[in-house]
Image (cartoon, rainbow, N blue to C red; front, side, top):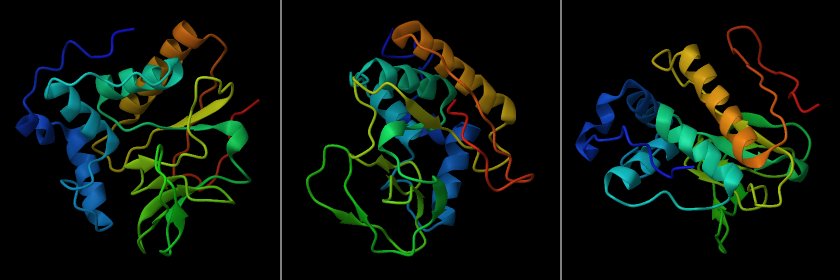
Length: 198
């Protein structure tokens, strides 16, 4: 699997011209985060590649969804399912919740009003998709993983989301084996969904 997308020829200054990148920058601004200081994960990955740096090799599963993230320019979050406890929520943090990032040794504290993913035991992300936690990271021996991608505004189409998850499923099956199950939550219709884990 190639670590870069050969169609990516844009200059860093042109990134904001893509409506998907711009949608996530605007989403960060809406909850008080400067997207130039804490970049949405897809934009950070794109900038890395455009600046001539390779996509880091992590493991087959993670690199499968990083490939798709680059292709669709949409952030993807991933967790090892067996390390999650209880329900998974996308919510606003009240602030001062402990968080240890992937590879980190020091505990950070969330800011009040920050968008986070969390289960019943801990915060799983900082600033929505800026940084993932170490506890539930996808590792080479992870057998069951769960991935998330969202549309923060109408600028990100349902077709983009479906295309992205289909590409992830294709790459996961191609490079990792196993099977994938897809689910879609439309907040205009519901606020919760049973995760398709069976």
